[in-house]
Image (cartoon, rainbow, N blue to C red; front, top):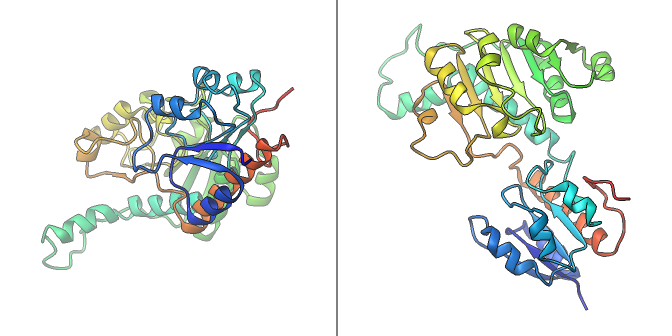
Length: 322
């Protein structure tokens, strides 16, 4: 008999086929995430759960599924899962690190360039019928080549962003809770305390996990340290940036521009005041959204799930079990 699993969202075809061959699959096939109560209801007799960042997976939900052997998340992060509760219950939690590094780094650069050269404003300018002649001072942006790039979080993605900066002959400075000595040698990046990175960066890009320490780390105080010409890019987690403080900083000209792929709240309501600002670009959490990357993310999640169902260590496990 195939093990029963619950999947909280539609998967790419290759991953779906692999899962159907090995498991009896109950899937939520709607556009929006399933309500918490729906997950609880469907998971009661399941041995496996495959979920996304939008799903709250807490102790009560785990207790509602006495047969649950494994939780497999299709994401690098797992702040939506009570890891301690899962560990206490002997449930391994899988995630999908590494695979989305290059796609996310590429998109961070997409946002950086779009903000620097005011691409969003240019598109709207043309659509509004304002483009009537060539202008010497029309929509002038920031120079990227030779500028100083500040990176907060020098993990896999931060290092991938730094590698790309070499093609623009940029000075790269960084802050991380742990010095990355190898990256300093191989990439030529320079470690600084966070406040010094904020003060010196022309472009600041954030690549940290969401923790109690990083929540709201970009706030009124830290934004106040940045140059008035600085551009902020966030492809990590929305709550890392204090939305109200960012709005105030952009509105007052305390910093020049922001480009966000993640927001707080998320999704950002269409009438949110941040979207009224011409110097803010917001995209709908699509940094890893390439066909190759999203398919491989789902395949890693399937491999994690199947390993957990067999009682084997997960290829990419977020928690360490006794």
